[in-house]
Image: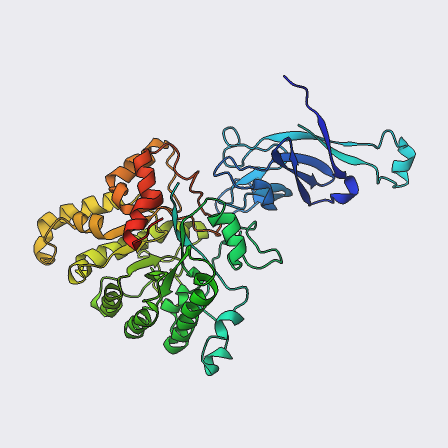
Length: 136
Length: 347
């Protein structure tokens, strides 16, 4: 299997918590999300009818519950497709209603640059050179 | 691929575009149509990826609609249905609602039909005043891109009733189909579903088919198709999986109860196959996808089904993804032939 290549997307500072950026890598449209400071990447293609999934709303979800109970959880971790409103876990690409069969491809994301710039620069908050890198 | 989309929703960027086309007194009151009964789609009904470049509402900018829909799928035609304005049909203040109705129809022609020949128009009418609606059909119905009349499927009296016949008479006279579109159920002066009010948007949206069932039964049994021999009906966005079982039941009952509706001289289903059309969105999705084609065959979908996207609403369908693995002839009939014949279109 071909080794995955790292692709620099943007500076960490350019992708704040709750935001996303959509990029094209090797002809594939991919959405990169910042969820509470962690980065995740999903294919921008809904497995249902082919919508641009990553343009959907970032939201939360209700857990399965007893009648009359509403347990709203995971605010900011759920992506809702702009067509048909299917919910996907941004962290895994798995759908909420059928995680084993319905899922969207996800990719590894790392933040690079901090280790070379030395811990000190991180400590003083100079992190402009930290890059979000997606492995495809 | 030749393609007609039979349910596309256009809205103004601002309601001022409508109110400025209304007479002076009503203009100053703006546009206020019956809203929800307290339950709305919590995600909103508009695709969040279909806004205009400056945040304009989805469906309000013709160039965006063309880019995302007509050009993207190389559509030959898109039938506009001003669903947001169908509330005129359940508005209790009739003169005010008629002013909105006329303003919408003018706005549709001036902003959309004039913009691109691929846009086809539907005349919005109000069931609250069938006489005034008939006059409106005759006022604007001769425009070349107008293909049908549309009204809300939500009513106080089922749509087969003679009360509505002036609308049907005018539509037939102008050579236009009559389309029904959901959305106003449980709002304005309309009734709830027959068992009572739904308690969630999920219930409401699912039960829209129930209302369509009773409208179809009414239109057939009260003799509308006998009285208006050229008239055709389009059932938009009410689902279609229910059609086979409803027709089986109608036909079975007709064999015993024919004398109660003696104007029905043939099986009720035969009138439906000839004169009623059903749009596909939101396409039903059986767990076993092959079952979809079985349902299509049971309702003679090669004659009765027409593709619709419902762009730019949240549950819109893609013409290339909505019908996996169905027979190619059936698919071509749904995507093009049936609507082309109904509306008299050529590519």
